[in-house]
Amino acid sequence: MLIAFLMLGFTIGLGGEAQQSQPPQVPPEAREWIGQTVEQLSVAIREAVFAPASSDLNELRVRAARVLNTLVGHESPEYRADVGDPPRADGVGVLVYLRRLQEVLEPYARENDRGRAWLFVLETIQFFSAEARDRLGEALHLRDPVKARRAIRQALAFLIATRGSSEDPLSEGGARALWIQLRNP
Image (cartoon, rainbow, N blue to C red):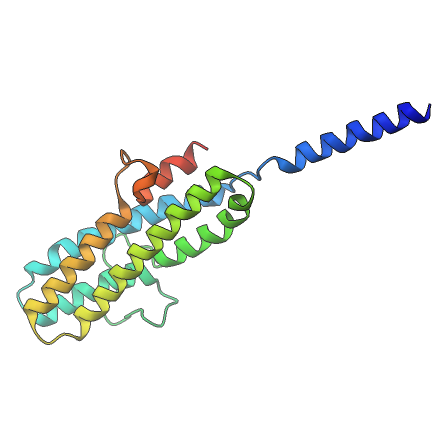
């Protein structure tokens, strides 16, 4: 009887360990946030594409500020309310969505190789987004329209790299590739 009881306890213990080793499910809001990230990056890219064609330095700065607003969101001290948002911007901010994603993916990454890959890609996306934000900040302070255009083009390149393509492998680090992965875990 004692042996049967010990074996039952051992079996239950193994079952508990197997259950604990299962990775946690990715919360549905993570899928929503990466989808919003892709959408807001598209908004920022559309606005940034037209900035270099702006006729003067003031218009360049306005467009750069609107792209920056899309990245940082209404709650950021960097947000420029005087210029507002481009059409279809939701005001939350790409960087806010990325922070939220990091918070929900970190626990998943601790227990799962796939989650670690997702977190690595997310960190790459965050890096590219921060670089775009920095280039836009530069553009806002430059007095030379040629240099401001160059800074905006650099920001645009970082935004395009941040969004990536849905055909890209996850290893190339774009938000669209991460979106595909999170939609189909």
